[in-house]
Image (cartoon, rainbow, N blue to C red; front, side, top):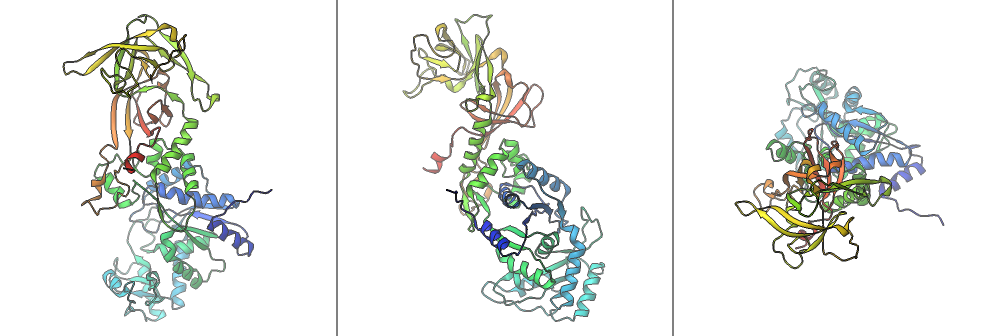
Length: 556
């Protein structure tokens, strides 16, 4: 029996268009504005735009909507291309809205000649006043009935730089009583003397996004213009532009719900505030929602694509639990990441009855989830490091780690029994003493006796020094934008979002680790080598813990 797969509404729309012969192929585009870094919300749009093209054996172009030169930069162009490639997608061609500036300008003249556009002298404040509200219709501009000849003359004089910035705009002539505010004679061109990163100073008038976008789509040959839901109210204008300009094979716009993720911000304005105020270490800070930040933290492209696939394509906006993204990352890294032992908060462990000069090695699996990754060698010697929290002089009943007189297992090595400890002047434990059981080599005794706990360790003589940065969610509340209970959104920051462990000790096998390499630190979670690493001093970022530590907090 043939399997039946459910299809989302975008696929159903494309299927119908192909069936009716509206299009004979599928071409999409991903159209970011190069005025910032891509974030996790963009990942969903990327997966949809490129994914639909792949599914229908079509093409997806990358087009930069560079219609606002005051906010755009080549830096953002480069970062966007890097992020898309990192996610594993390949564009067919790279275009820019500025490639079509001549075509868009001609389209504006076409509208003027049809009596569908006019030059308006109202100030921005007056235009807003004339626009009306959701409950009240707008009123016509006093310049709306200028003749076609006058509008053509004024628009060409705008183009030639005869008027100062903001003195005049070109507006579409549609309907000031429309219930859709986007149709109330929207601005389609404005005067802006700004150096463009590609066209230089050729233009002093630039098209508005809502005018440039449908024309760019259609000139480029896009069949299905897939947009996030906030553009739904703009679709009538999208269709109006293409119809009135007179394109024979116009593109079709289809909207889908944006990705809103709990505990994260994607607002460019607020993210810029985090960067400028030094709350985070730049746009690629591992706590940021940017794709470059997630890459630095150790998130994998496969995990992000899996996450986007799991949440699906919806018509209504919703908030996705951040724990789902972490689960996808955890699941992917569990299959791929080599295991290693790392002591983040070390104290010395001296095995008193172990020979001073002896060093043994133990062969252990690199990753029990993937035997093909082979084995690694772990050193054992008289002087070791263990986690400070793994020893207590006195401990509650459920504490299963090291206490004086209790036998426990050192992972993969021997059974040991603590005999005492040394302290500094402040009463802090600095050294723990123990004795090992020679009959328990490999972590299992000859008489098969049971022990209550297992802890990890690192041989002191072979340890690799490292700084470990324990990253967590940047915000302590699920909706950090909500300022109903605070005066500023930064009051919702999680004070424990970054904890530095400066003196971590790692297995010797990590000495050659390079930025981007990912490992599972046993009992701690998944970690990635940071770009701040230097020779002799590695820096690791925690990608995600072994378990969701927030579910208990959110359920309280």
